[in-house]
Length: 88
Image (cartoon, rainbow, N blue to C red; front, side):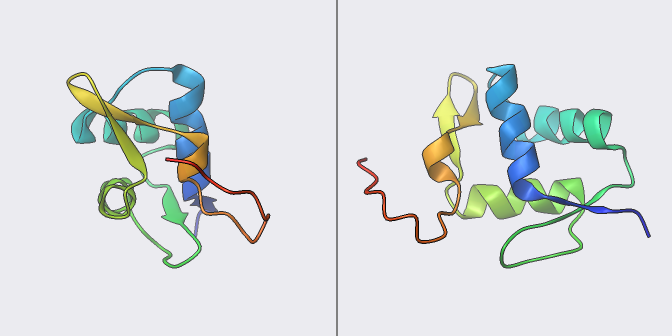
């Protein structure tokens, strides 16, 4: 079984690119970077396909609307009790 990639890796990829994505273009970008057979996990789910990961992140408000699509932001990643206040 291939290594599972943490969902934050995808969010890092989005931030590095600086682009906005649609669900379809993000899925394509994920498959281009990590491979079409890659599987993903997060703090609360595992063994997701790229499509499932995109839906999972969207459902949890990880994406910030941008133009025709969306992007992400560092403050959308789950914090593990780092004590920083997030202002929205």
